[in-house]
Image (cartoon, rainbow, N blue to C red; front, side, top):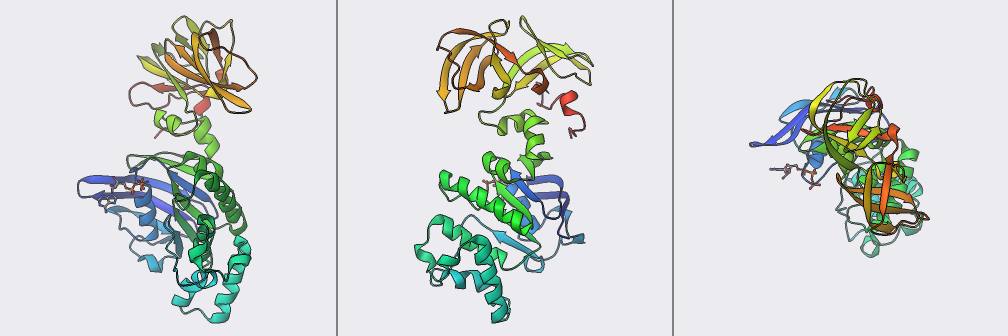
Length: 365
Ligand code: ATP
């Protein structure tokens, strides 16, 4: 049982609060990603779980045991960093086996575990090579091998793919997820790259300013963001935001944008006349000449099977993702229609999502 539970975890450096009352649980065997912009507290959270940083307050439980004040070496955890510090004078086999040698594990057991790690990572062919000549990807595999041989309860990974170029990073994301599916070890993974997070995570904790804004599956976070911050951070291009001013009564299922009445999921709370923001993902917009919501085409970005078309409207620029065979000329006037079931509604002040049919069962914290 290797569940990680973080309870009211708080970390200040002097006056500065790096992590604010974090609460989340990584279930046994789950792959959880801490995602957010630089400085939001991801690494500090991970270092506290690892035992490399002491919390100001709060608790960390590993497999039900309180380890908050235990040293890193006393926690059954393996840490994988971006800067994989391999020993240049050792070959791959020696590098992978080194942590076990330090722990005094018998030679035959080291050999067994190193062979097993090589098989899992599919690096049997490079085991006798020096690490100095290896590619970035192979070096990363060796670093993972060093973590795997320890057979820890959990893996903690801090931007382990950050040093790789983007194409190779994509390949390694697939490999890491495949590795996780084989090992089923509880994993916490830190990144600022939403594509990495979306492609690997069972659950994502989206962080901002030391706070966990939302914790949920990639689908929940993408489809039902609890704040404009989350909606903006996840998705490429991000969600479109259309500011408008009007009150929306409980039960209402439409928003008035200028001359256009836009159908949307029913709202479960009264929202007093205030600035509101309608959120729509680019793929939930289609062109419809009959729609009163109009604009002129600013430009198109061809992406192969799809294209991103940017339209200037009185609510600002709106980006729509359409099939690339749709032909819209720059400067032409178009009508836009939104997929009513997929719209989000946010408060203009603070950016929290308004409780609508789309958000039933989602905590707004
Ligand atoms: P990055 O991706 O840039 O590493 P992050 O989300 O991992 O960002 P952290 O490294 O956790 O962020 O840092 C959170 C904040 O805490 C930052 O503003 C950082 O400057 C500050 N911080 C981290 N460690 C210390 C420290 N030892 N002393 C003072 N401030 C610190």
